[in-house]
Length: 303
Image 1 (cartoon, one colour):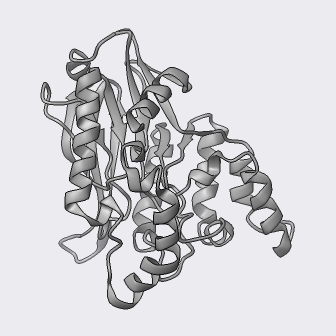
Image 2 (image 1 turned 30 degrees about the vertical axis):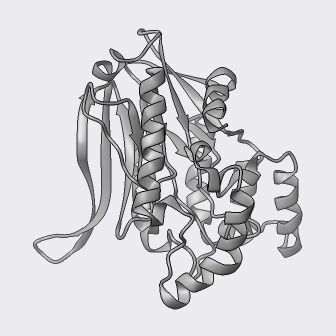
């Protein structure tokens, strides 16, 4: 079933043209939360914000590859909008410049519902006309995608960007079970006793590895470049050894990872807090894989 969904994305999704001058950044699994003990991003917020400011200034197009907002733990976006107003201001700047695409994942798939925008606005208005204005401005002027097709010019070859949960049974067809457990069980056990959510590929090396293997197999079988998130496991294959890339997540300890396509080069990038010789904290952007020529991977992609 999941493989059919990937094929559907290829056939039905909007197409993003990519050429030698394109600058794209892929960020996923941000999990913007309520600012409380269950907010996985809050410790990395400044790293994440610094990365966004860099990509905006350097004129990258931002593609959020799912699970941007944590809507399993949280019933709506009210607290997310309040605690991350500054982030949504940056997102609005990207969107005003037509440099933002937002893909939903399993943790924020309610964004695909037709009543999502209306339902959020109804909840926000209980707290005043200006409450959550940055968030509402964004969602009312943005299309939510299950995936995107990348059309690489002039090679006439394609790639897919999607969250990746489509090949994870417990987080796709059976996601209603996982969502219930996350919201009412694992969330509190994690805060009280450090208990890890067993249904999440992010917390299980074995489960995450199996999903990565499935995604990698699909990409190789269809000879299609595939960029995902979901597993929180950054992946950057060697040339000739695979076509599946994973941008990791924004909830690693003291770091986030992204994938960049920058004028024909593709890279896996880590943003982290480091200490200078003068004992000053600073945020560092570091290439942990690549840059490699995108063209070298496209040689293995079918037209």
